[in-house]
Length: 230
Image (cartoon, rainbow, N blue to C red):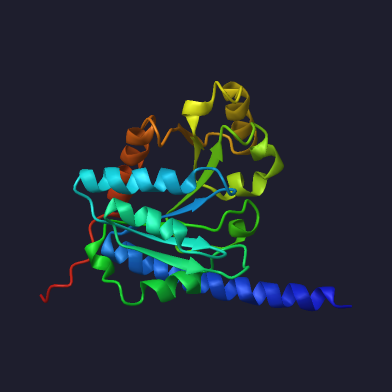
């Protein structure tokens, strides 16, 4: 007897989240701000990947910021701050994903017009984050060579809701006996045509292609709406 009520409550919560996310996305687009949501399991190298992304974008003269979600500690935010970019940490205290209102609260006193890119490093989880829109324009699914090639088959929901994927830690592929062709085939079988970046935060492999992709996506947003008086 309790199941219909549980489903009703969950539907209402997701509806409210989606409304908040849509309003945030509209605001981001009016500013020409590209927002990227990074989703992976723990240990994929998500923070190292994001750190290099922030550094390299800043080297290109871009203005960037990041929000990091974790159950506890601000360790990742402190690591990312080494990039020189503004970074804030959200501690969920047991919640397995970020929600739109959490992100909205963290952005409340930031001047978003100052940034060209905003990155959201989601809580390490391959299931829960897939249902929660954070107002992003790009959802990136990350898979490391240390995890095995079958993650896309085990967790198709993530890859089905992602826009692009990145294989991380490719410098360790030989040591891990990683089957590249099989991994790519598995991703293709779950999400045909998905763009996949093969990367290494340590060597820099694949990161220029990733940054070029982001630049193209940001250009596609168009110029920010003018706030000048007629």
